[in-house]
Length: 106
Image (spheres, rainbow, N blue to C red):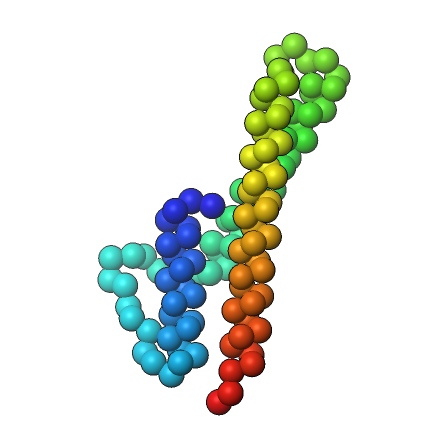
């Protein structure tokens, strides 16, 4: 997840929190409007890509491909693991925010 994607996600969450509090959300004039679903889909695609790359390198190493060394495999596995863990934590935060909004008394 890039820092630009995180900034856009945070601005979307802040706007949602402002709406939930009954306030008008602040408009950011210098950032382009990006749909939350697009950011989420792009992030999921990046995590999926990292996992597929890791799997591919693992298989090639197991089959004895001379162009793949153990260090590359381990780095790819760690990248895939970290990206997945980050995505899970982001999902947990979104679920928590959703539950908090749903429990808000009107």
